[in-house]
Image (cartoon, rainbow, N blue to C red):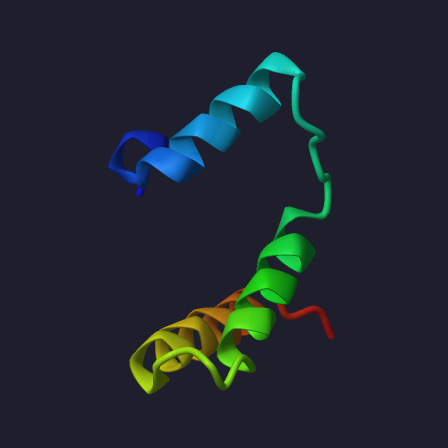
Length: 67
């Protein structure tokens, strides 16, 4: 996936980070995992959304595993 395949909200923040108007987080995987964990744990959201977030987080954890 590239930035042009993402929703408007992501493309807007991407542009702001790239221009220096929004802060860049070097630990991007940790940031993404925290956001996905928050979504997966939010019982006010649909089970489908929570499952998607949990699946994505679990895959990120496995792909970034360091022994």
